[in-house]
Length: 448
Image (cartoon, rainbow, N blue to C red; front, side, top):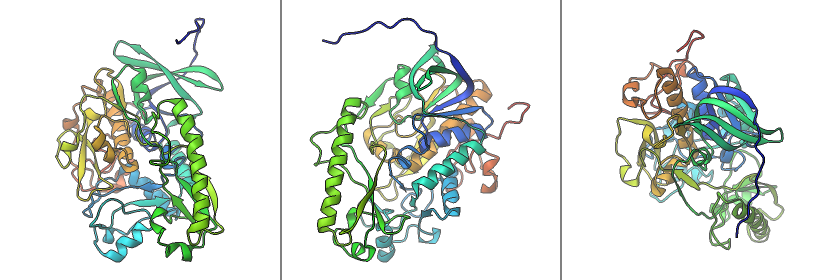
């Protein structure tokens, strides 16, 4: 039988106020905050850890799968492409040149499979996917948000919301500084677990999963490792003499977990580390080239890609694959299927009730099968960018998120991608590559 304690009434200080409060600093939150700020809104980004990127950095899922449709056509650009450009300038990423996208050449396909850039069932072609250095990603993410004027706050965990009718007025955070609140005009939930949607009383669907714990090895004899029959189990990325191991616990761990349950997470963290260390020992004993290898690092967070998903105004389904939508705000390919795309509507980013809340990233309103595509990092960039722009536009037009007329806001794109810093995104869907399909010129100091 559960027992309870009664806490005394307390006053919580309001430490800041912002237009758009983005919670969760993964790829979706990064994109949402930058897009909102570049569109002219005051944006604040709050992240529970001390760096940005989420699974894209701390989870060591350091592969952007994918920015194309599997036919050689780029479908995600915007802020995701900007991150690739920044990493490329630092020589901190690897990807196929454009002329190779969509190529069925077996030699090229094998080359990029070895880099972890081609997945799924064949027959394969070269995908526009990107391998990158996670530490460089963290630094570029810091620069992107600070250059955009985003108010960045680390080391705070959202624990509650205050609502006035159907609007969130404050979000409550806990940290070493105690309990604090931030006032806001709009909120974007980029927690990955739909935490804010749950706190706001919105319905969600939940999934149990087998956890992953990606890890890296170093001091590998690459010549021997590259010719090993065990080669498909690890990938060469941006570092020398080391490999990335996308290690999953299915069929190894005792049971699947509810990754929104802290006790299940505790079990999975301990068990996955134990099993990964055993896997490294196995590689040393059986895998050519790994005789003197060592464990260079676990991912700092479990590779959890599904917990809770919003049940929003519209649930994107598997049956909507390859179906065009006039109300789409983002588009994504499918990392395991060739030639398949999803057009993601604004209604999949907003809840049924709370009128100033949007979600982005892997907790958008999609069914389990569509989620397989929409959970990936490039797609999270795209939905984050769309959510940031949409929230900014709703504030500028004085409407609720449900009242935002997405179709009237979409139109022809600016003439060249060089305008990216002037516009929220350089492509709004009429060009082959887009991040978000919404448009917003930056607000001047005089107002929108």
